[in-house]
Length: 103
Image (cartoon, rainbow, N blue to C red; front, top):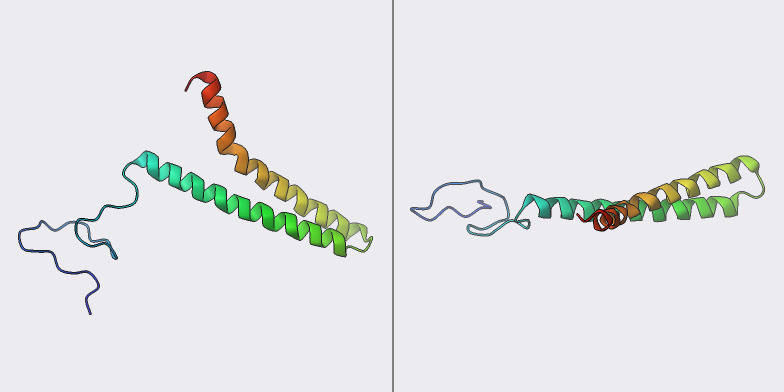
C-alpha cells in the first residue's frame, strides 16, 4: 500500500511530505507566518491553562471547608491562573509598545 503517489515522469524528486500531493503548498509561506502561527497557538494553550488553573483554584477554594492549608493551595492555583493570564497578554503588550515607538 503506497500512501504517496509516485511522481510523474520528468518531475524532479524533492522533499516528500506525507499527506501532500505533488504541487501543493505548505500552510505558511514565510518565516514570519510561521512565527505568527506559533504565537497564536501558544497563546491559545496559555488561555486554556489559565482557565484550567482558575477553575481548579475556585473548586479547591469552595471545597476547602475552612482548612487553611487547602485555602492556601487554592490561592496558589488562582495566582498561577493570573500569571498565565498575563502571559496571554504578552503579544498585545508587544504590539502596543511597537506602535508607541513607531515600529
